[in-house]
Length: 123
Image (cartoon, rainbow, N blue to C red; front, side, top):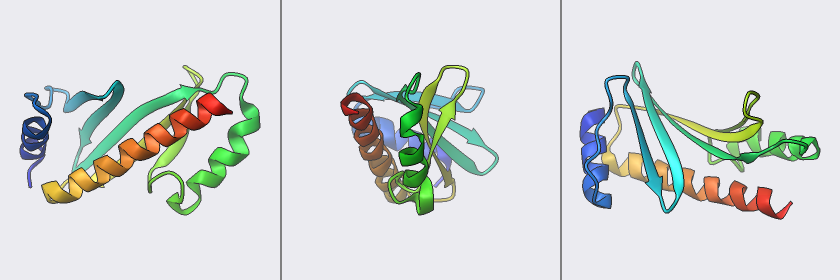
C-alpha cells in the first residue's frame, strides 16, 4: 500500500482528512497524545515525545533496559532529545506494508507511548 493511501485510510478510520505535507510529514493527536510521522525514502518514522527527563538520570538504566531487544519499547526505540531534555519514542516501518500491518504497529506504538508517559508520571 502506498503511504498516501495509508494516511487516507487512517484519516477515514478516525474521522479526519489526513495527508502528508510537502516535507513528507504528518502529525495526529490520539486522545491528546501527539504522534508525528515522517517519510524518508522507503521508511516511515513514527515519533512522539514521552516526557521530561530533566533531573531524572536515575531512570536511564531502566530506559536502556527497555530498549534491549525492543522488549519494552514496542520494537521501537526510547531516546533522549538532548536539546529539550525529553524522552522520545521512535518506531521505523518499511512503507510497503498493508494498512492492517500499519494499524497494528501504530496501535502498539500508542500503547507503549502511554505506558512510558504513565511510568514517568509515577516515578
